[in-house]
Image (tube, rainbow, N blue to C red):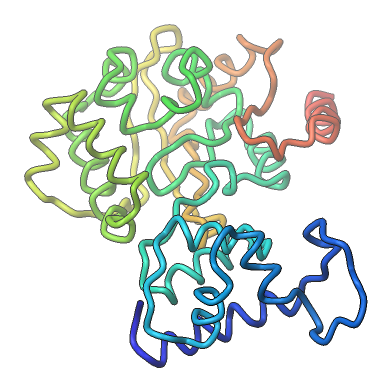
Length: 301
């Protein structure tokens, strides 16, 4: 547990989260003669599967430690959202939990991806997980849908997929840049188990990644021109832009806009060649299929 002032803030945060809930919110009977505005301490302890005395000490700011598993159970018992749960962990001095892998995608993001057609565009996380993408992006390096959602990651693809690798005019430079960006992001997430597993697995899968990671280079991603070669539509010169959508969720929009008339025409042909495929796709369960279909129909018309 953290210092005294932080423990006091942790305790106050628990009390405010408990006070806002009613028994019906967590599936408990209301009962009679309730003397507190929200849930009782014993009710939270029961829901979280912890001892009442121990939970009471937490709310009193006593210097006791709570494991990430227990903190997660308390967060679930108090119906905390991702932001609140992360705040709870920070106040407890514990490693921040992994966010929901789908949390970075919303319906407006999907509509934006559709409107950017035929320019390839995708919603990615700071770890380069590809969470949503339009039709042009799907077919920019082959068919992204051939890979399971957990393998739709730019770093994984550029170090393990020959098709992605052959599309880059200067593969080594592209690999160096993505590792430098990944290491810069890792500095903010180094204590997260999901990030640690990701780096370890990529290290095991790619000797090239291992070599570049050990160099320790760190870098950002200024807007630049990306040079690719598509197997059907030839050379592509793409102006890359990366814009944060939800910085607290570490999600960004990555856009490849045509840098010349030849590339613009090639992207139109790329999008048209798969006109029977969805305009936008995502592995996120938040997709509103009806609204997305309406958007796609309007754009197609």
